Length: 578
Image (tube, rainbow, N blue to C red):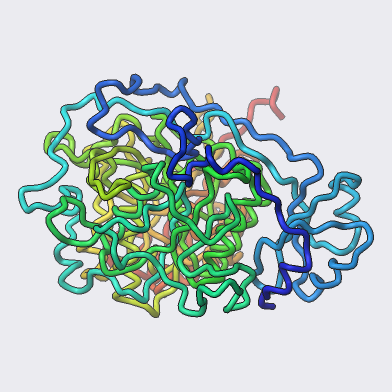
């Protein structure tokens, strides 16, 4: 069902605060009252001398979340939404969006509990709406290394050479029909280097009416979800403008050039305005991007606090199930396996260095771990800044749009490819950087993105690896299977795809131990409870394929079609453990 203007008007509108003079979008905003920027931003390179020390794993940002009293995010069949307008007990504050025949609504219901709403019968699911505060952005990080020249001798940003952009650009520099969305703190839409790079809604006319019937009046170039208006601009915060330029900045002599300068970006402001930074704001921005046709989204924010937020987890899954790739920064906490690595419906991006002596090494500030999906240059990245400026900045916030820029190029060259195929191509052609990062080997994702390879090479058949966990007696208790390429989730979730066989060839276990998603990186088979004996864990080449249909290459000879076999032994348990 399409959400119409009248659909939104049926419900109470949100009131704005009364003091616009101190608001960041006001051009007279006070420098003494800066807005919070819930991002993974670190200071501009020019300010590194005053930045704080690089954090250790113990210096993780503390993010506080609290339930907003009487505020709930509910999901219901779309055909039933209109009936809520006259409901005597349920007050809908706003419609957040629609996908797959279900509509997300924000309910203001002080007199009802979550349990009572869940048992009401109107909704399929109801979740708390959380407000996030505290250290919702990662602290500035000192470089610890000499600042390199952010612009290469060619006059363009040096990270473009690191990701091998020229072979890709020989094919495409991005198509204007390719739409990516950036959810952030507000874009300098008038920046001259970004001219022509901002998405324009083809079905909306600036006439004070909701021309396209999507529930947003005059959304001609994005939306501000934190102020609930059609102006997603902001020149007070640097973050959004820098991120947008990394993907889209136009070629020229400014020193800033985007990875995909021919594509366009949809600016969606989610932080810094009158509405609190909440589950509802984030979910609504994603559902808007989905409805408007964005197939990739960049969110360079600290989402460690989102773990356990069921409304956002469902929104992530909705995007993934609707052919959208969501790229999110891996985090600047210099930590392994941060809480955000639990999410398996988004792409987490780690940062690598750009200086000649440290190129492809993990940036000292960057998180890493088994849940990281890909790496990209994030140190001293030259891009646009508000008020027509250009400058360098560092962080996983900068690495993330580099990766999404490669996706924009792949999508421009292959508009018929699914999100799964695009991701398989990007991940499968990334450069292995384990030798440059021996302490983080296997934990910097599939490697560092390589735009040239992603646009010119056929991805190799998918492969697997495995590592054992043994108890003190030397008996195998767990086998962790690592996906070294991207697998089609439907194939990986088939019961016949995985088998554990005993020495007689009998199948004693089958099927994956849990659901496998597109961005699942590894799964654990707990085998310690099996009877003593010799076993084989088998991944079936008949059933395991990548999103292009290529079968598993179990023996890694470069040719798909052979099973993956991991032999292991379970020993007799001591009588005391029997």
